[in-house]
Amino acid sequence: MRATSAPEPFDLLLSAGRVIDPARGLEGPGYAAMRGDRMAAAVIGKAAAAAAAPPPAQRLDVPDGVLLPGLVDLHAHPAVEDSKYGVDPDQHFLPRGVTTVLSQGDAGANNWPQYRRRVIERAATRVRLAVNLAASGESSPGPSLGDAAEADVDACVHAIRGGGDLIWGVAINTAAAVCGTCDPRAMLRRAIQAGERTGKPLLVGTRHDDDFPLDELLAMLRPGDVVTYCLHGLSDRIVRGGRVLDCVWQARERGVLFDTGHGMGSFDFQVAETAIADGFLPDTISTDQYQRHVGSTPQHDLPLTVSKLLAAGMREEDAWPRVTSRPAELLGLAGEVGTLAPGASADAVVLTRSASDHALRDVSGAVRRGPIWSAAAVVRAGALIVPARP
Image (tube, rainbow, N blue to C red; front, side, top):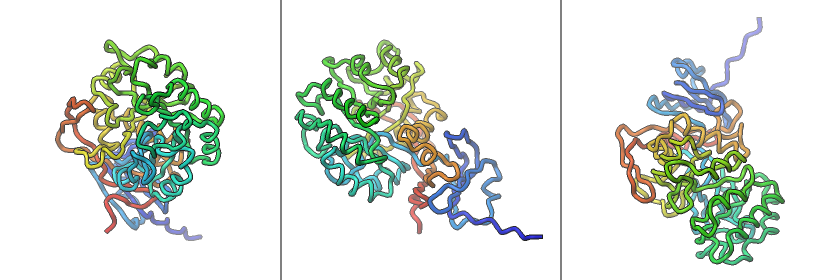
């Protein structure tokens, strides 16, 4: 009788009180295991971790934690140079559980090659770019689209075609702080031209002014385009009179998507509570994390943004897909990212919840109380980032 060979040990095993893989509907106590830079197993059951054999090379048990696929932030500012908003992704995203992040326009056609070399190719964090319609990206101190010549559709299309899968789509913000004296409709039309010529979606910031009302802007967008900053409390907010506006529902029915984009000015508890109570949840939860957030207390990051959505009434089972499987799908990375499935990239995070409630503030200072979630363990491509290896 031929002897069977012993199973190959895992390189790393994480166990937690709850293992959740929204992409596969997996939830329960158990473990996720990695070999090299790939997921090898995600097993549910009270005795699952104890039964893992042979012993892994490295093991971490967090019995009070929630183990999820590595978090995906659909709108932030990972950059190290040439962006007035950028922060180093390996310092400010990866240690806080974000293993994949989309840049909202930190680079445009002119500085895309440098961004690729200096950020995407050097970072341990997986970075993708929504290329700025402005050819100079966010490298200038003033409005990035203050000069209409910056909105160079041909240059944008050329960058996208050369960027392959590293460029997700086109970033366009129609606010006066970005467009300056340029017509926001014209700028949006140019972004749409670039998207149509390349088959790419847009990441869109709304006007915040009555000269380009929300219903008109939404009517211009196409299925697959993403409206960010969707829970702000400014003049073109998505709720009025205690309900979500009809134009917003109609846009969603047409396939337009909505992203949180918290930032420094785009999260209002009353708007979030009204939208959630009306059954309108953002498609994705994102931070719009950038330089002004460095050193904030509590630290602004994706787990904290989730904490605020939960305090506003969102259920955990609705929140976790919006920071894992759903943004991964929108980025075209489903199956590779946002899941613990065997064969996927070995990206994972274990989140723990504070024992007591804290004051959670929106951008205007309004307070709701609730626990704060934070990253207790982070794995990227099979490497344990937090806690650091001894």
